Length: 307
Ligand SMILES: [Zn+2]
Ligand SMILES: [Zn+2]
Image (cartoon, rainbow, N blue to C red; front, side, top):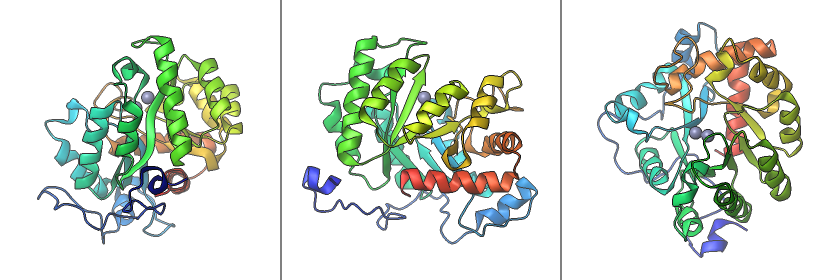
């Protein structure tokens, strides 16, 4: 079932345009990537020759640019990313407000896409009609996924039964709309796996923090696995082992910015330009060239988000 069928909106189609054709005018300081070759500029930063033409680059599969920590310089950061080799970003929502804010950013920057969904931290505040509201947001052409959603038993900011219900409703919606899910799981591995096994959505386990063994179970379900700057931390051996166990065709890179800045920026506010460090660490783990790692994770992200 596509979204046009489900919501009777004749303007929505199952095909996803590469770029919106009717974007509102961009502000003077917003930079479009149209007609530019980022990879050639990225070469300067990465210090390696390009072998993949101009269609690839860093794909930040998970970021939070609506976060208030970007309020002072959001447009400066976003308009500088293309020159730093960043080709695409998906801005992940945490609730309905951040979903709307992410969509607004995606309307101003061609290279930014958005998700719509409710994070387990915010599950307790979800309105009764949250599924209708998320579904309505997915009608927007730049919304490519539902999430982030999932379970967080580390903080338990929402009661666990509410976390599970809100997660489950979003899984059902993702299946109905044939959209990928962005899953957040912190110290809730068993319950997360149980629900994913029951619903079998397509999508991403983001900011992966589990073991190599659990990664195997997630891979069996067909999901992609996203790694943040944590993979660069010297004390994150478990994460490095998990990354080693994920085949290249299921691997994604993400910042989860403004959080999770990689070394040598650990503890600072993160942005997508720092993805180079994460890509370099994963390339070392995989024993391949960083350029190859960037090309592969770019293709994987385009595939899962259907961009
Ligand atoms: Zn998360
Ligand atoms: Zn996140």
